[in-house]
Amino acid sequence: PPNFLPRPARLQPLKDALISGTGSRIVGIWGMGGAGKSALAAALANQMQDVFPDGIYWLTIGQHPTLLDLQNQLYCDVSGETETLISAQQAKSALGSALGGLRALVVLDDVWDVDDAAAFDIDSPQLRILLTTRNNDILVGLGAAGHQLGVLEFEDALLLLAGSAGVADASALPPEAHDVAEKCGRLPLALAMVGAMARLRTSWRDILTRLQQADLDKIASRFPQDLYRYRTLFAAVGASIDALDPEDRERYLDLAVFPDRVAIPQGPLTALWRMDEIDVRECMTRFIARSLATGDASESTGTMRLHDLQRNMICKERESSVTGLHVRLV
View 1 (cartoon, rainbow, N blue to C red):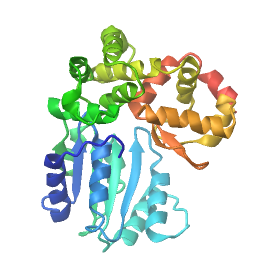
View 2: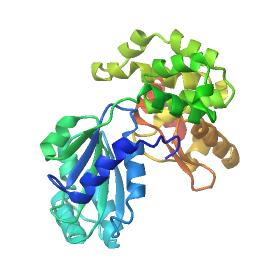
View 3: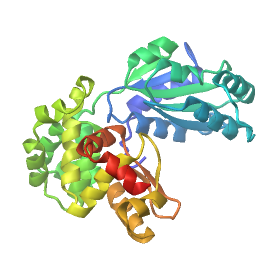
């Protein structure tokens, strides 16, 4: 994953749990949004391809999933069949037949409800399930082996900040960068965004000023109470958006028209932004370079994704005009 900070002390216990299956075939990574759960899961899956020779399958679940579509997607990927399964129970049974006996890993990323994960809980001794969630109660409900992922230690936060900023030696970071790391709550997503600002020639002093000027209580008051603890992350998102030039800032906020957790393709953006394909790809690349999105926009089939907390931020900004965005896109 981009801006990934190796965390061997976190990876090894997860590897051991997945290999052994002792206690549970389901292993979960839980922690607050922006802590790097998905990045850790991706790195882990990438290192375990030899352990799971029959395949590693990744499903992004999200807060409002269409489970039957996801079950059909997994069934098609595993079996190669194009049959459309018409009920969740039929799909789970078919998945059991397709995955039975396979030494495979299914990654369920961003699970919000225990029933969503249960739809993929196939009783097969060699199958392993790795899921990421913000809610440890989901892991308890599944009887999963839970591993909490907290914020970074301060030295690790500086390493990630330096890497995102293109600084080879973290010890060369100025004192303002140390304050920036703390202002970001030592969350990897926030550090990656502000590090990208520094890499693109925004001074550390200006980044710190932007974060200090953010009214955290005002930011928090705009979101449900359960998102209050993300106020420092929202401040970092806001600072990164405000650092865009005015036209790019408006284009980024326009992304509120897209649903949660989807890969945003280039085609609709040419209509939404009223730009040709080359300009769209260049704009997408700028967002990705600033860690305001992830993906690859280098080819005509390229897409980008927003973290759900980034999307929460822009949806609040575009709350009064989202209907107009839908009309424009249609």
